[in-house]
Length: 307
Image (tube, helix red, strand yellow):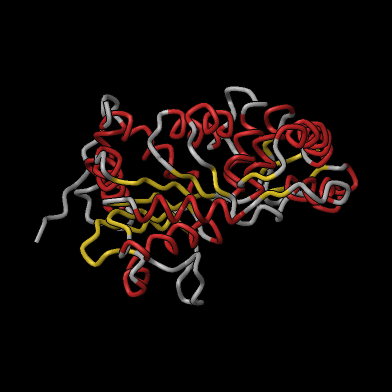
């Protein structure tokens, strides 16, 4: 048995060293954060490993968007799977501002003021629906003029090349990292695609091209690993496809959801093993935490380790 060690930390202790010490604390979530960094370090360094990143849209409304962007810019992952709302927020924040608020604000008053509340992030109406509608109407016409049938990852690249360098979609396009959105219709961008399709029935965002891409990537992968933030469709799409190569070799889950209701979002890595979506001998760990609390520490520690 490993002994519980007191964490000795002073003003000169670096973040990476703090995380190392957390691995020796013995309780409660601290060791899992340390383990997650080690799993991701090994996964990213392994050249033969196909690396997935998945996340829900909400974190793109926060400053953590900058970390997602940097991980894609640094090419730590080969495939990204997310939701339509991530495209919405990335576009909106490329042209307009979001603001800090509180979970306990008066939502009736915010509605009267034309301000949406996403947790404790405030999004003025003109910073979301209006700007997305304006940009997408123009971009869709341009995309349609040279391509009428494209996958969601090709569509995301088309958006990315029209955005600035602070956008994660820009770096996905720049590095040719596919952003796959299996639920492309579920958001403001998806709604604009549907609106455009009403008068351009030969325009098709073809999700089956995405599935073919994933199939080819999985069947040719020697190993695979994933950092899975949150749950929902983006989480399931990663583990679903990886069952066809007998499961992920590396898996890190970050979630606040409970498994006690049988939800996919709350399901732990051990449950995925029973489905063959994570290998029995895989390196895997669950962090029970809200992502904006732990992702900055994971990121900065990996920066040190991946030099």
